Image (tube, rainbow, N blue to C red; front, top):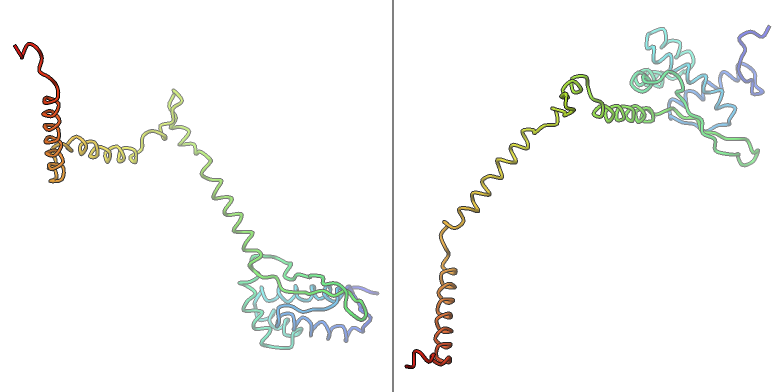
Length: 219
């Protein structure tokens, strides 16, 4: 009976197929991405997801199970060290398959399989938190609604201490304008006033010399 024999055969024996996927999954965790055919990439996802699940568990038995698949100790140690920080936010879907087209020669469909980076999931969580923060200020609490008077005036929107501060700062400016006349006059302003008075006297004398005296004054 063919129980628990799921998966693609890929025109290979069981021993050949297992050895091939052991090498491929080792190269995937070592280089973070590899290029292969579509059929092999889809089947390789099962092996990679199983190993990441073992690494997230992190106990000694899981490490020994991973060593039975990946024969390089440094790759297994690196996977178990980075699994918690890299894949703790997601449960499954640790790999991504991107199709590249046809291979020159036999026209086989080629794909790139790579491990998912944590930045793709961190961006989604950041957007959600930003939306939640922007939505909070527009909602009124029960206490703010209770602060509204019977006339419909919101007491929370009355004059704030900021407005009082601005009114206090405006008072010295008005006083300074009223006291502007008591300030000492500059020497240039005094000279200008003297020249204007002298010019006015000259114009008055010239007009009196040109105009004839009235008849009453002649008599």
